[in-house]
Length: 531
Image (tube, rainbow, N blue to C red; front, side, top):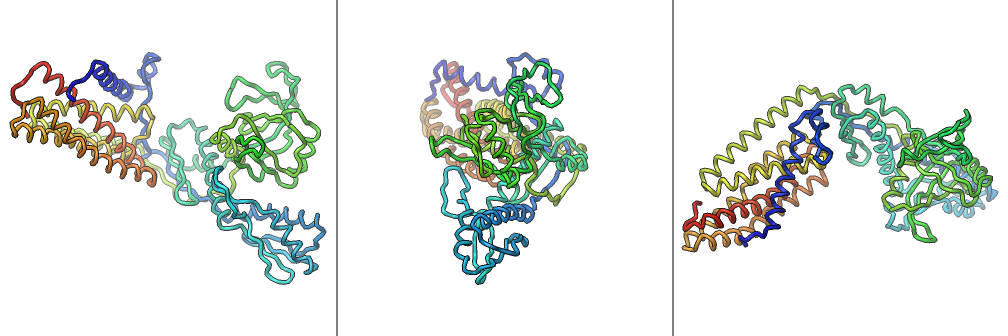
């Protein structure tokens, strides 16, 4: 167990050196980082809102407005369906989140119920999960009256979808500022937390979030060279995934995002490939149907924020206001595209529940306090372990230094955002890092007192301590993982550093110190153990 092959020794050395290289850019200025050779790591830690200062905002999706708008769309579908069935009705309107109507002929009640229920769609919260639950609930309230509501499941999914769409829109808007590592994440069922480090003007952020992304559908001009002479009725736009790929489009759009009711990922019934289904309102359906009928075999472009998301060919006339976009989509890319299609405009107003600015002075004080705490904690641990275990304590301190380099190196590689709780997680890791060594060294002492030789005592000490070390760290890892999964903001920052610290601590305490002890045994061949 104490023998390390050459390749294992080299691997440990390379990993330790990598920690140093990935940590190094954090101690250089911006110009120095840019001047590093291309093969050198250049990623650095980003400071969170509590360290760098910036703007904090808590938004709420106004679900009632969202549901009312959806019910308005369903009302139009009901009117169209009843008109086609020649079922007379009156008082068809949306009140709050409910659609009410009355039939002129009560004897047509069953036909009306069948026609309205036929408009319902299955509710599913994922691509792979089928469901028998429908999106609307249709009730007969009297001989000639009908009430229609969204089902509770459909309402929940609708709000969650709106939150996802809003997050995508907000992220795209904030990225225009050129800020690094903004925090944009859901909080609860209908809220969005927005934190933008380095932006100390909440008014600027509010104005930014008030913008609406523009989604349009255009006819593609295949005859004009995108790099040639472009007439005033044409438009040249790049592909969203490849800036060098250009499309020439008819400037006047066929439709805009205002006509898009919904877009959802799914699977094709013919070949089970991932697709994106979309649906227009009544006006948009008519326009789209007429256009596709006249341009079968030709491409049309879907444009978002002046970039072409996709330009599929029209295989057949698309009537009824709905269609499918197919291609080499994975489940993830189909879901992303559906979100982008829905992100043409905010699905519902965003109400500001909380807003505040964090000054950079507080961040500077926090960083300084974190540095002092880290240094004091590190010095205390180093002195304690040296006094307690002598030479073996020196090995543990070397491993502790490598551990800190690995933690910062991994955080830099991931370009994680360091927050004040994250610093607390690093400080805690410093204290926990030597726990494994303490367990190992105490086991070695016990074996040495039992009269065993140095090699046998050391090998037995590492073997006996391994189970205890793994048990203790696995339980802590599970707790940290739960914090990361369920927590938000600062809690996640603490959990990230703790998770990384646990892995690197086990590696350095059990592998690195064992390598150092092995090298010492090989060259010194001691008769006793100085521990």
